[in-house]
Length: 140
Image (tube, rainbow, N blue to C red):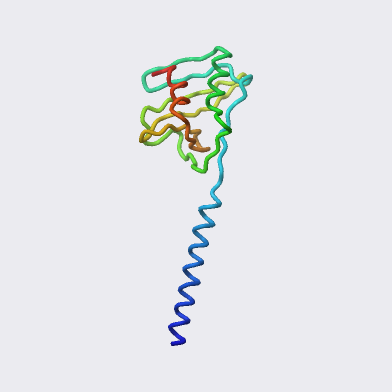
């Protein structure tokens, strides 16, 4: 009887240890924040699909696009590990070109009737249909 009780106690300890490890791993995922340029750093924005490319140079339109993409200080726990979205439906590429050379890229796309913004090697963020449409209108 004592042997069975000891086995049960060891099994319970192992089970609780595994549960604690899983909980710790799930709770400690890194949080990613969207990194967007400041409006005054951007000289132009290229918005493109596979077939259409639109250049935006108007300061007002650049401000509007960055404002829409900023949303409410977007954060996520979903990491982006590719140069471009995988399994995305009609991805739209957004390229920021800076005054001091260089640039940055992000994508907006749909997937299973949801809308996403993805910054390569940073994070994948949910966006609303209205936010998606206000950028997509340039190329769709």
